Length: 125
Image 1 (tube, one colour):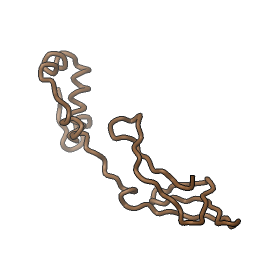
Image 2 (image 1 turned 180 degrees about the vertical axis):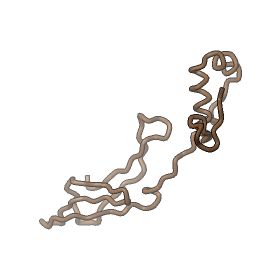
Image 3 (image 1 turned 180 degrees about the horizontal axis):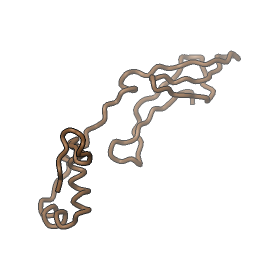
Image 4 (image 1 turned 45 degrees about the vertical axis):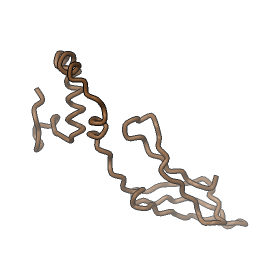
């Protein structure tokens, strides 16, 4: 193909990709395979302009492709049913499970529970 597909990693299932967009060069340009992406939002590629002119060109990504805000984990957490009995019976009795579950909740709310030297720290014990 003569296009570039842009994929991103799924926000909660890191084993899946999500299709974002497809970019194609102008008519008459054939990409030849060598590409590089910069942090500034450019895709540089080599091409051949028919019949036999070779060159290097770039595509500048739109802002929504360059700067995608992270999805807040809290939306994933609140969309799931929370089992009150499981929390009080199993989680509170198991310290490692407690740290995993409560740590996930605090991470989802962007609460600092790991670094006591930083502002907003809370002790979860």
